[in-house]
Image (cartoon, rainbow, N blue to C red; front, side, top):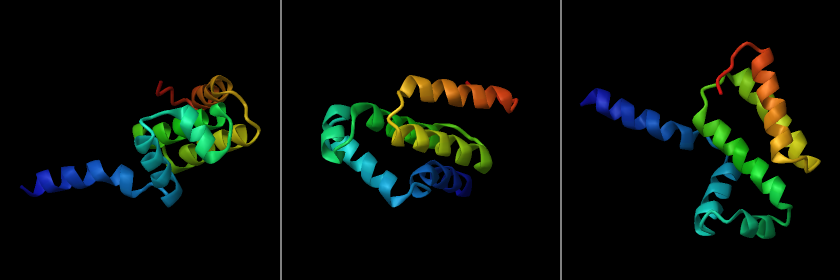
Length: 106
């Protein structure tokens, strides 16, 4: 029973570890049925900016990177988002970083 409780806590950890801002983004994402177009209107940013933000959250939730790797990847995404660089270019840059660091997770 204790192992089952720990397993449930670990499954919830990804959500608990999110910033308040990320939690609010997920809430709006659900409320607007996953419409990135609507989210871009709500946040008054471009569609690619919202797509990069979502990719950033997906990365946080789905990959088990070290804190340093995650911090650097998030930095790349933030910079790319700020300058509204395409999601495709951001993914290429991150993929290259992962390859160069010797941890090809994708």
